[in-house]
Image (cartoon, rainbow, N blue to C red):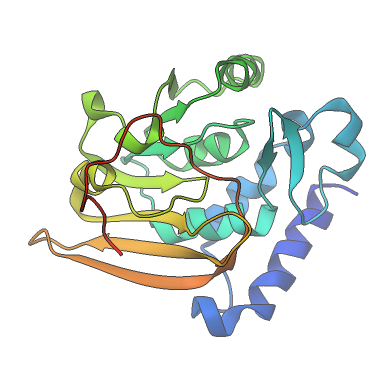
Length: 225
């Protein structure tokens, strides 16, 4: 198993799901980034032999590294440009973060589990991903200091689309987020904010993610469905 095998698996999955995602292939820049990042460097030692399989893997602390196809699809939906600044909610292993870093100017990534954030930062340093800044915080609140963002990606399933993330998204930009309760139906959502600031939400396909934990109390009515 190697990167070539993984890329072939992503391409097959795209063809299987083309009726849902509305395309026969993903952006070439995204696929090139997927082919550059060594996924085996972002998984625990006991999972390295499975690193290039097209499936999720546990990374400890009850978290997972997402299926390569889902990483590629979510990245594609962001429609990134080289000058963009991106917010990621859920650093996890740092694999998705590394993919984003190849495609944009700057990535800001929020993780609520300190140990995962530390391990991800060590990987970024060792692999020379230098345009990534991380923090340990409540992902539901985004990262207001560096807002607004050209794109926002959430790598855990939320019960609803957090209003602070929508507010921190630039006009004319995309937010990609899985929505739904763990153990029940979850859908990958594409949230678009047009140039007038109007919001549309499209469902892409069913997914399965670990939960996005909210460390603060949500005020009543603060949700977009």
